[in-house]
Image (cartoon, rainbow, N blue to C red):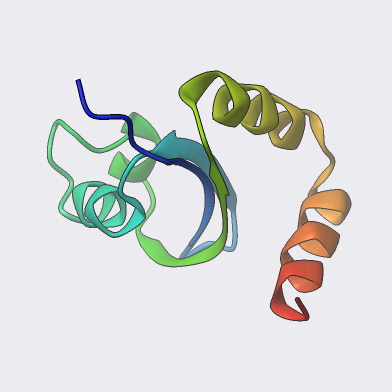
Length: 89
């Protein structure tokens, strides 16, 4: 099995909500969410994804999952600071 990098990503919806997930291909995953297919998250059946506003690469799924859990525990204000901070890197 080929080892791939994993990414944690945050997508902003048309309503301004922030959705966090993990994947090995951020662009593909965004398309799946936007296409409203069964492969997309149920969250986006009621809200349209607008853009990926944050992504960070990890060497394995375990690390990405741990970081995803950390982000999901953050307040919206902390998530916005994370996103703004990544724009200045």
